[in-house]
Length: 484
RNA sequence: GCCCCGUUGGUGCAGCGGCCUAGCACGUCGGCCUUUCAAGCCGGAGAUCACGGGUUCGAAUCCCGUACGGGGUACCA
Image 1: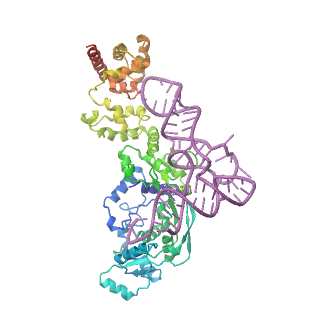
Image 2: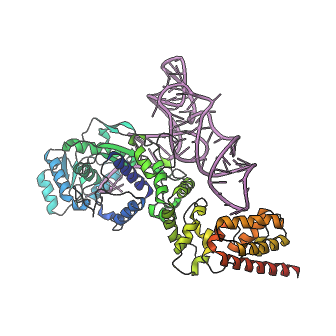
Image 3: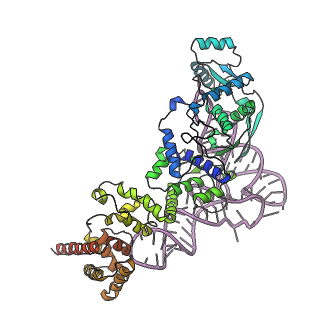
């Protein structure tokens, strides 16, 4: 499900949650040429991931079932017949080739392309004849030749349309399926839809819908046309500009709350400067009238920031659970975690969460930060042990002193480890940075790592001491080689 | 072509006729903090409110043009 459509669903959901309405999923599968059997599953998975729970829909059912348009064809046929009976619609046997030729002629003549309402006065005999010949017959809505139609949009206010510019349009296709126009009007009435929230590309079609409603004698729901989401260069968001399906964001390590929050703000604002919000907060502050009327540009950078904000606020258990899959199935093949025992110890991850959460933008970032905790041994680079303003002697001092100190620390807790190691600055004369850099590199094999004391505690005394010992050897070797 | 919608720093928003010498956030730059990286805190740069006309004592805010951007113009949604 694409970001744009998802954001629309989001607004529907927020509105329903705020006003106590129903959030309904309806599958619009009226175009058999574009039918995608996976689409429904993707939509449900996306909604589910974002936590947009349905009140009614296919499978879960509801008072207006069925919720799939291909199963509601009779309803549309009935409506079409009603419109024909009232003279608001008619059968048209103009064939596709004829339409194409017409268009070609118009374009060649520099005229505006469009149907010329030529089928309006067919007799029922002519139609029957065409049917007998197996020709295509559609139902078209008869649009008044003149006049203006006014309609209300919740975000743009009054909209005016010149009906003389609108041609008779198809409401029922030759295969018996309705077009969106008919299906939308019929279903939204039948299902008691109060607010039609959809992309602004529908604005030009609005008069069609109002016309059908008037002819059918049914009320017009509130229309809310939301702006498009565009990529950085202002063009329509597409695959070219990075991920665009919600599930891709899930797979890339974004949290549902962050995506929800970011998307909500892409085309809506609460009216003040609040940006980071929980879903409940957004739902309670959501107002259809505050939806923006101009397109929003998608910013991957701001989404990352938003993700980090939500990761920092997330519940510890939930965050741990979200991190686990990243560690179980790390993205980068060839990494340290390729060949370790599974499953990974969740307690270890959880213990690190407090120091990890403010260091990652997307969930998979944890891998590079804590992979050293899960492997049997690491391969520190001797050169990296020599930090800024350090000489080789200081590395030996640091490693030796820390081994000695950590052997005695009791209990082996963050607090005790910290005070023991910090105490070393006095006895060794090393500054904190000079003392900790070699330890960090020896223990984690990284220059950039999570806070040292937490890392050491989680690693445990035995493994820490072992790594410090190995580090010492590696460094000794390095120094000796340099002498040669 | 015609129709529709839009236009506030690089980006996302606030602004709804005087409180705007245009506010917030992202990003960016500098500083502080600091065991690395972050986070956090402080500060800086960055907008003639697309342009031109009106209306008004007064306009980013209302009206009209122009430009630019987007959308629509299907037996697609």
